[in-house]
Image 1 (cartoon, rainbow, N blue to C red):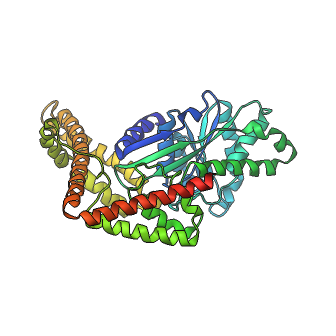
Image 2 (cartoon, rainbow, N blue to C red):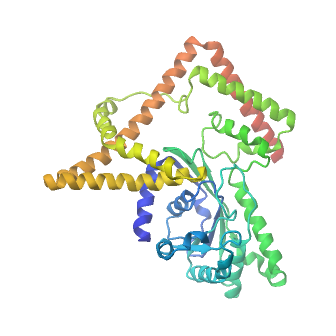
Image 3 (tube, rainbow, N blue to C red):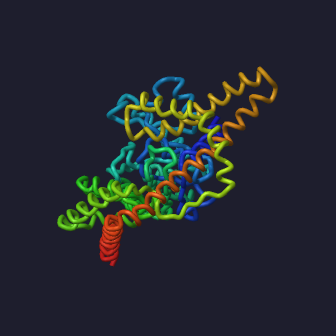
Length: 415
């Protein structure tokens, strides 16, 4: 079951995201037990994405309240999920965490990989909240049980979504330098709890260095405006936007005023994400338009139903992208199989041809709709150069000033 669902989610991830940027794959130790410790901005999309990125079987530490019922325990165990029981949710089951830790030790002894989120819960704030010592205690406990000869490595990961809850958005996965648990051997033998806290601190700092971390909650709105301003053409905002943390109150006010004006001008000029690159239509793309229209016709029902169903079911906004991803995949699969089966019963091979046509035309539609939006944005941008010259010059000047301000602040802080 794990292998089948992992292949399904691999396909779902590649369809859901327009661009997946992976940095630091060389930091993943090979043929060694690893604990993967990412930030947690988007529900169960985060472990699915990491499982796809590292391309090896993984186990997941998950909240224990999801394992209360027998069927849930059976199903989630088949997905390589391990429960951790929290005192505030399942106090009567906290004693079982010792057995969970032992299971983790066995997995690491077999050179397995485990994902554990140090924050303990998913949230949408652009920062790392308080981190817990679970990852450090598992790594050090496994090493202690094997006389520190296991060579467990902890791999901090930063997940940086442009918008995890939007179909065809982008994501950057930053894989940090691995931390060998053996590094804390002597410290652990002397003061086990303090060693676990120190290792947790190192894990935290590495995650912060590879993800967006805005210290002050009052600066969250500034961050949100920046990531939609098109100043930096990348989903990896960790380097560029770290400067927000170092602005004083006067500088922050100047930046906010500039961003408000920038967004006002952006709306006036109708500037979109892809406006900067030249977009031209080839005869081949024009010839694909009828196939793309078929893609809309074939796929509009499951596409709309996925969005409606997700918005009806979800109770937490940080899980919207996760449900869109999983529900979308299985709703589309069920739609194809049901209609394909009905058509197959009417005429042999007709159902199979229908399913293939749905999938191929759907991909053509995704490609051409992106091309059309980019072309439309570029056309609007070109018109603004001719008809709204003063507004356009103002927009470009403000954009350059904001980028210069952030880059100078980042450079000074680095020095």
